[in-house]
Image 1: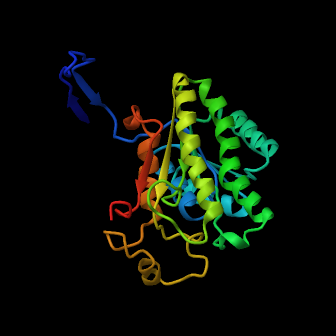
Image 2: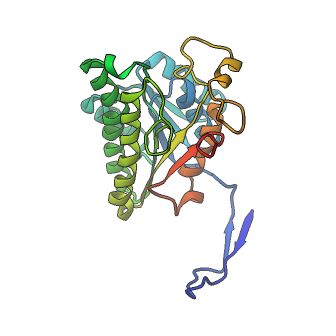
Length: 277
């Protein structure tokens, strides 16, 4: 049990003077968490980690068989999980998945908007189809899922929406060659997060973003390069290593928990000090 003493602040305002957590911190027991892009990489890690904290987990992605594999891992550890094929660009498909989850478990409390693609291509060579596909999946898809999730969360006056952005999102001094369409989408995620946080705060819904730096995932490493080669791609990272999906999942759990109850509209950069360097 963790107890914290709270004295009056400089304005003379104080609530209870003594706060106690009777359970363990970051306890998500009884919560229903839906993760998009959860068949591999960071999304898979988020699903497994949220389940470890007690959440019922909905695993979604474009491959149902891969989602079933992740869900089975959760069940083997004693957790509860559902798996669905989900195309985030199809609003009808999104609504269908949410309808089924609500019918099965009655609610959705936590959303991790992780689905996304990455394609490196010089700006002059990006086609209209490639631009639209990137924006449709990485930005528009995140909005459709968040919008529906918020409608469910508002019914219980409690919710957590966590949007996965990137250090490659503009405004932070990091320009990644060949990522114009990806950066535009992820910059949109951060702007969407801030505006959505304001709209949804009266409904008890907190909306935040996590912006990972270089993380060792299949999307970031499509050619299966050795870990050492990936680290050499990030010479400006003070910690001198690439991050792991689990290190992003730790931030997800924090923002999903009651311990983050006064945090909304922020972007948490988990980048090994990349921006500081």
